[in-house]
Amino acid sequence: MTPITTSIEIARSGEQVFAYVTDPSSFPEWQLGVVSGHLDTPTTRVGSKCTTIRRIGGREREVTTTVTEYDPPRRWADRGVDGPIRAIVAVTVEPLADGSRSRLTIEVDFTGHGIGKLLVPLVVRRQAARENPESLRRLKQRLETTP
Image (cartoon, rainbow, N blue to C red; front, side, top):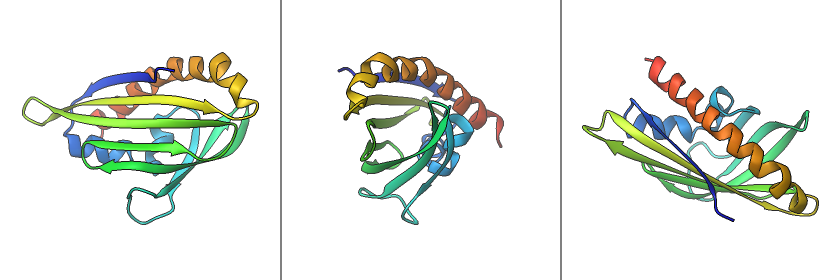
C-alpha cells in the first residue's frame, strides 16, 4: 500500500525540528496515544531500538522499533519488530528559506501479522490518516511556542 504522508512547515531550523521529532522521550508531547518512549542506546544510530508505550484499544502496549536510517538533520526511519501491527516510519526534514523554517514530512505504513492483517486495512490505516495531521499540528505548536 501507499504510505500515509503528512507534511507541515515549522518556524524552526532543521536541526531543532529533527532533534525534537526523533527524540522518543518527546513523543508523548505531540503524538496522540503515546504514553512514553526511550532509546536503548545513549545516542541514536542505525540499529538502535526504540521502545514506546502506546495506548491502543484502551490498553497500554509496549511497541519496539529498530532505527533503519539515521542522517541528521535530514532523515530518520524506523520499523516495528514485534506485535500484530508493525509501523514503518520515515521522517524527512527540509530546510526552507534562510534555514529558520523547515518542512517536516512523515510517512507511515503498516504491516499486519496474524490478526493485524485484518486490522491494518480496516482500522489502523484510517486511524493513522485521521490522527497524523493533529499530531503534526501539536508538534508545530510545541516547537513554535517553546523558546
